[in-house]
Length: 245
Image (cartoon, rainbow, N blue to C red; front, side, top):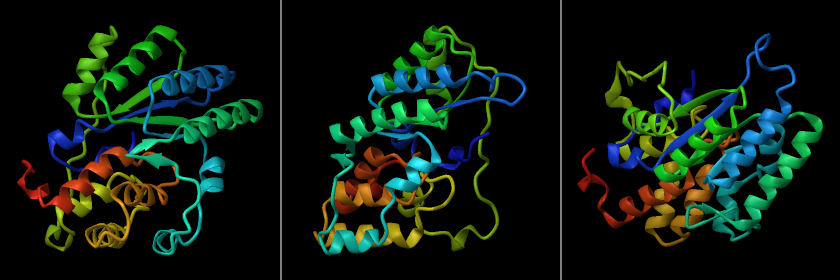
């Protein structure tokens, strides 16, 4: 099970959002799985994910305080993303995390893709590597099925979020929910999204930087900055509500 299944958006928007997890189970395949997990990460990195969650201690180390003021005061140092994509320095940092984590066996990982082709290629290579890991995918069922069958897999389980019930009139607008639900732990607050909408609309910060700042509170690394940049652009240009949502 994964809390990333609660992501919201149109089919068109969700076709820019694919997450692949590797997990182990105590008493089954956890013991001695370190090399398999390392290989899984190497495969994911080969297919250019837009975000990765490598381990909690790494995410904690990367977080910086006062991220709103970093934007306003122009004190943001070391860009992690450019045009919604990880910078080459970010990718090198992920590779360094891989080397450090391999030594202390603290690797836990997932990868986020904004391209079906990259996602499907990653699934194909994981299947070919036969790592003995449990692999979960969060994506539209149709796309998951297509990628699995192309890799020679028939999926055996589907979990589906039934949505939100109750006083839904108290929820924020769809554009806010579409961004905030990209953090399954709810760390990207509604008010942070509203603030980014305002800063972008007033040209105080760029869409690229707003997407990066939205990704920062998501410590586990499942936020999709590339998709966030597209949503922010649609909202700023007034085309968001024209889409079929």
